Length: 225
Image 1 (cartoon, rainbow, N blue to C red):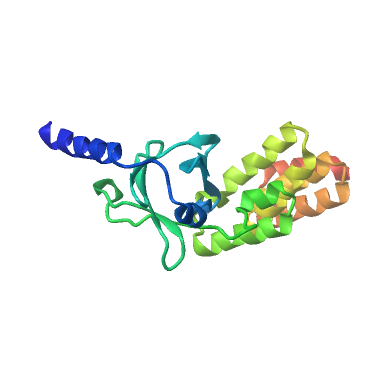
Image 2: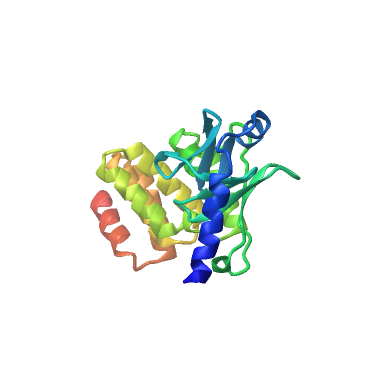
């Protein structure tokens, strides 16, 4: 118990002796958006010179300043360290739970967006390019999970947002061009828009990859009988 309480006491003592205010130079350097993962952003801003973070729907997270460039963020249970060279980025202070891994969040460029942000801005070409780059770097990334993308498309269909559903399925086809199911979903989205020509093209493509795709068989029969 003493081994646990002593570091905690020292941390609290350090925090109590550290002003939460930040210098203008640090504010200018640290303010901005950081790529938390391939499709998620952690945004740093300042209120009355006190650092605040926007992350996962919470706009007013206030990490505790423990040193000039280090902050403890309770929501992460991590100490974030701002490193200015060679370019400004955030690193997580090493700890046993990291198992030797280094966590590095780069500062995003002005106007840069995540793939999902490009998508919601209706910049579909840029969104696709960004998703393809993720696949190139890590084909198993959760951000491009085929089933996850498919569920998102059907969520849009349920909300009667057919254009967004169509664009999601197009991206999924580009990511997984040898998968029968993605063409079936794209065909269904076209069918919901009463575009039977493109629906037929995609159902046939799905069946060319997997002749046993029952959904494509059924829907193709429905529109060609």
